[in-house]
Image 1 (cartoon, protein in one colour):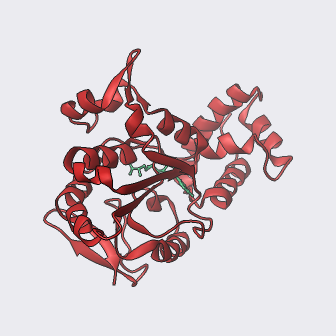
Image 2 (cartoon, rainbow, N blue to C red):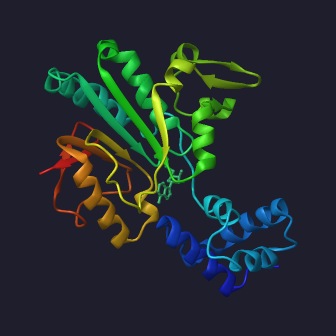
Length: 272
Ligand SMILES: C[S@@+](CC[C@H](N)C(=O)[O-])C[C@H]1O[C@@H](n2cnc3c(N)ncnc32)[C@H](O)[C@@H]1O
């Protein structure tokens, strides 16, 4: 049975209210196919039965996996290459000089999905900046989805996942076999703090960060939500810190407090 307009609208509102993710009309097929799987998993007879159960309470343990299932979790190691080149060539060397005094480096990787992005950052730091071993390096990796955070914390990836973007030398150096899969080594896993953070909620508990990666998540938000997130990012980014967004995302025309920093082949943002 195809999903009705009223059922689709209910799911859309639920997802928007909880996450800020806006599901456009053309996503109804996606919602329907994911709800079909969840209807089977939860023992509801049909999508309509599942939605009827959801409607009985404003938010229950049943709502959480439904909301999480509507997220797009696409990610891979060293995605887009350039942000990592910029980190390696310009930003980390600059911060190594600037933060000589307190020898502290704080990085937040927001909306980290299954963890490939923060692990890419940590491998880069280990590989090219061994002097950071004597620094206090804090890398916080967050996502709204507890299912994704569980995967990220485990650090276990299938062969096809480690084939995407990860240099072979890094696979052999930083991972070990785990059955038919690969697991990133414990010392790397334990050097990252995984936390559940909803970007539509307050960031007041966050300390100021030197670098923020917030990539390929803002594209799912409407203009108002993006603006309110940038206003919060402003407060947790150090005055000389750097913000990385996804290729289809920008602060331009949304928040004039940020300026674009152009590098050879890529860009990032900093506060004016
Ligand atoms: C496409 S992935 C991006 C992963 C990674 N940053 C990258 O660029 O490869 C988007 C992630 O955003 C997360 N997400 C969606 N809405 C969120 C919110 N309101 N707060 C935090 N994370 C959210 C999803 O769970 C998903 O894992």
